[in-house]
Image (cartoon, rainbow, N blue to C red):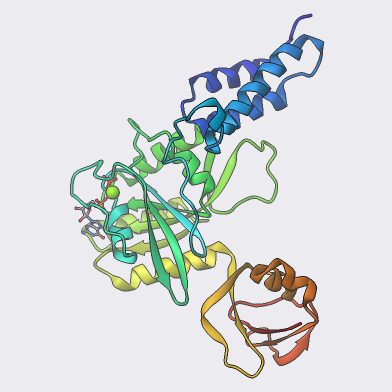
Amino acid sequence: MPANLTPQYYKLEKEFKAERDPFEKLRLARELLAIMPKHKGTDKLQAELKAKISKLKDQVEGGGATHGAHRVDPFSHIDQEGAGQIILIGAPNAGKSSIVDAVTHAHPEIADYPFTTREPHAGMAEWETIQLQLIDTPPVSAEHMEHYIPNLVRQADLVLLVLDVSSPDWATHLLEIRERLEARRVILSDHEPDEVEDTSVMYKRTIVAAHKYLDEGGAQGLADVQNTMPDYTIVPTSVLDDSSMTSLLSTFFGALNIMRIYTKRAGQPAEFRNPVILPAGATVEDAARGIHKDFAQKLQFARVWGHSKVEGQRVKNTFVLTDRDVIEFHM
Ligand SMILES: Nc1nc2c(ncn2[C@@H]2O[C@H](COP(=O)(O)OP(=O)(O)OP(=O)(O)O)[C@@H](O)[C@H]2O)c(=O)[nH]1
Ligand SMILES: [Mg+2]
């Protein structure tokens, strides 16, 4: 019985065969299985593909000890730390490492020649009472993009697209970066749509750093970026302007759509150092669960102070919290 595979299948299969990165290969294999027509004629193909998926799964999950050690690409995943993971993407020399150097304790190599950064590196930035994780990456250009970059972008909460606005080349670089990522089904976007028709495509919320805006030509470049990308949040940045770095971190916090909830024990002051980080719109019950999974079940009531226009009132478990609320749980 003929398999009757579609042109779409053959196209994807070609991509699958050419892909070297195991994470991406696994994703493509699952996609292939999903679009494969399911009938007698494809039974053998389906079984083969399922075996490949299982092998790739072992590989990316670091398992499969019984099958011998598999080499896993060390750069395809960076463990999330802090309240959000932000990946910096940009052309060679745009200033990505300089930004990471300015706002975190990491000290990446910075130089006035392109392709200085060879590997991704994470650094933690402190903003008010929270920590944000920034990932510095090797540059993306028309000639080259490290194969793991799209995966890192997929896994991050937010992208910071770094454009050197003091150079008129920023527009060409923007186009090249977009094209490179779109070829790997990652679309930099001013917002993440609620629904996407093609689930293999990922839209990633992107903030733009109009970097080196204080340099010669920077003011014009900034204005041009604002005109070209009217729907994006654009932050003028320069390592010569400390306040621009603080604005950047505060913009990240806003775009992450999260809130900080502080806890207190009855009769004691609130603990303002380690907030519970929750998605905006979370409830008292979500906050309890965020601390411990048993907490939510045992919870009798809570009192909330702060920005939700309540001052220590008893509230229901379904009460919707606001950023910087203080909560006291009663079990
Ligand atoms: N004038 C000025 N120079 C900057 C600024 N930010 C970075 N630079 C300079 O720009 C050059 C490139 O900076 P990097 O931070 O290494 O750029 P990168 O994007 O990490 O470069 P690659 O690792 O090659 O992709 C260096 O000479 C920096 O000193 C800035 O805000 N203003
Ligand atoms: Mg760099």
